[in-house]
Amino acid sequence: MDWQDGLGLNLDLAENCHPGVLQTGGQESVGMVTSNGKSPSQFFVHKAMGLVSHVVHEEHLAALRKGNLGIGHTRYATSGHSDLLNCQPFVVETIVGCIAVAHNGELVNAAKLRQKVLRHGVGLSTSSDSELITQLLALTPPEEEADGPNWVARIRNLMVKSLAAYSLLILHQDTIYAVRDPFGNRPLCIGKLHATASLHGQGVVDVKTEGWVVSSESCSFQSIGARFERELFPGEIVQITSTGYISLDVVPRPNDAPPAFCIFEYVYFARPDTIFEGQMVYTVRKRCGRQLALEWPVEADVVSTVPESATPAALGYAHQAGLPYVEVLCKNRYVGRTFIQPDKRHRQLSVAKKFGVLRDNFAGKRIVLVDDSIVRGTTISPIIRLLREAGAQEVHIRVASPPVRFPCYMGINIPTREELIANSPEFEDIATFLGADSVQYLSVQGLVQAVSNDVGCHNRDLGKKMSTVMNGARDGESMCRQTIGGSSSGHCTACLTGCYPLPLEW
Ligand SMILES: O=P(O)(O)OC[C@H]1O[C@H](OP(=O)(O)OP(=O)(O)O)[C@H](O)[C@@H]1O
Ligand SMILES: NC(=O)CC[C@H](N)C(=O)O
Ligand code: SF4
Ligand SMILES: [Mg+2]
Image (cartoon, rainbow, N blue to C red; front, top):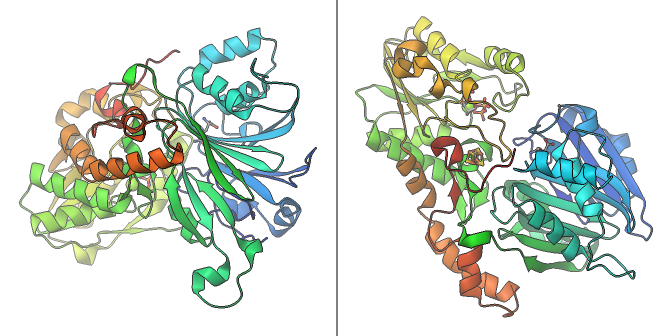
């Protein structure tokens, strides 16, 4: 076993217990559970509030190392308070032994399901939808025989009761199940952990360091000596043991509905070096910036970014517009992401601490300032003030995604319409309200086009892979159409358009 201390993780697991490197998706709490793989298995658990590097220490890792497989989670609260009680993974004892569950996403029918579960006499101790998932997995399905758990039936039972939104890891004894919801709303991918010698091409291959990892984002693999294998298909259930992984089933969507991968993962959430649908997030963001420049050109001297996640879009804008790209803001690297902070006060404080100005780069100049999104307006408004006070001649805001007008119920914390600046009366004249010379947004069509550019080829490859994975048991081509959609419209754009991929039951 070889832990890498102080690294973040989000739905990361490894047969050899390497935590991953993702802290971009959740900053509030950390949890890790490992198992010694025996029957009945012993679980080792560490949970704490805060960043991985602050709350996971050598003594915790030493205890977790007693297990040889494990799952982990960094939380961004979408359902239930940001406190230790709701921290994941959830661990419960069931008729088939202990299980641990890590969940990324939010159940669209959580309130109704909660009532159903309570009516069955199952007690819930938290307000988290992830606990609800754990309890549903603990229920014995009718198909199950006395001689052992039927995990496909258990997981299918959950998937039929709730179609979105979740990527899950379930730990039971010596096995981990990875599950992606039928709409593929949240991401999940598999990587292979290579022996150190095979990675660097020298020395003796130590097979003990080999294994399998699963993560929300492929970018975490490289840092732990793993290589990207593939994404899970929407609706897929994968079983991982020390000998490898197999695809157990793919649960279809009702009524031939298209998949609905969150388009906001491309816009803001994911790390730029992650691969989704066969394309690097960085490249997609750059394409969004180019498209933005085509849609909204402006007379200016320099183009710049609101660091961090807008930088590829700003570069794309600058290339397309033929303008120099310069840095105008200096980001304090010790302040984390603002948008995913749990409340308004935390968000405002982080923006105040986060940015300084590089006035020599822009004093007396007309700036095009690109941000990837404006949601509540917490970030952009003080920045415009800073730039003006430091001598910018003009500040033109260009946003590499459309206005966010509708709440998200699938895992991103955009809870009320009132909070969204695009719904405020001031939006009519947003430039004056923010103190900018102009503010323009990328169109929905422009964003979908930029995101879908390379997805067609990827889907054709996926069709072939799918045939192989399903062992020819079903026709790969038609399964592919059902699972990933025949067209490029496989993305959720609900927070931008109000068209939700499935009915909301609240
Ligand atoms: O309009 P708002 O409600 O402020 O939300 C939008 C801003 O929040 C995000 O940045 P964040 O600081 O979270 O992360 P980043 O450093 O990765 O850009 C996003 O990139 C925008 O800058
Ligand atoms: N993405 C997440 O980490 C959130 C999962 C779950 N809905 C929660 O609030 O805990
Ligand atoms: S509503 Fe927006 S943030 Fe939520 S899943 Fe859909 S695209 Fe993503
Ligand atoms: Mg930002």
